[in-house]
Image 1: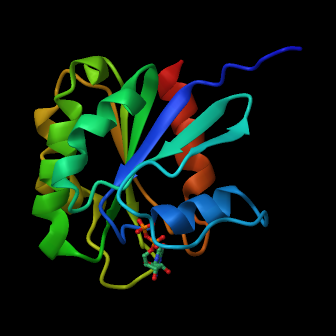
Image 2 (image 1 turned 60 degrees about the vertical axis):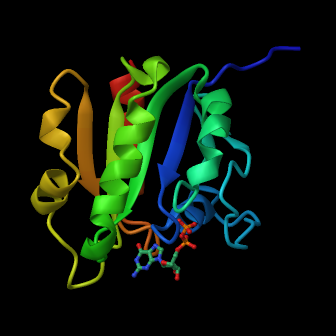
Image 3 (image 1 turned 60 degrees about the horizontal axis):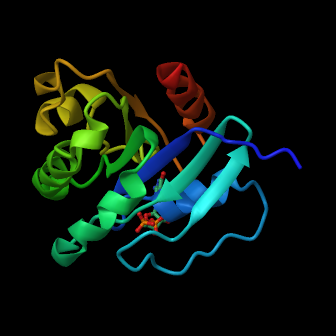
Length: 168
Ligand code: GDP
């Protein structure tokens, strides 16, 4: 039987950033597990032949870091979800992002930041979020930031198409 090897994309973000909601949308009507993510990988989703997604919750998971490394093997892109309406947690998000990107295996891996919850009027701009996450400091890395609403399904298709383009 033909086995498809979709590029592996790892989806990370602090708890409550909207990863579960985003996955539910990507599953388009299929039953998604909407129970709170419990601090580690909840599985790999094969979206189609072009993409497989592994979800990680990196909020408050100090002891979990050794386990990340297994899931970073063969990772072709990192998608990092942030809550655009929670400026108070951007320093924590910045720190989590920096930690994961320090893994040697992610050295040449492109980064897509999803500024989620853009449907809310108080959402920070992507410029503001870029600054807060120190994205300009990742000058040697291919990175992008896009606004989206996992709740309304806005911006997701464009974002994942961009991810496919970044992987090449
Ligand atoms: P996770 O912990 O990263 O999996 O986050 P969830 O998907 O559970 O979302 C946390 C909360 O944010 C839930 O109440 C969601 O309904 C809400 N949420 C997620 N995405 C959006 C969005 O795009 N817009 C709005 N307004 N709320 C969202």
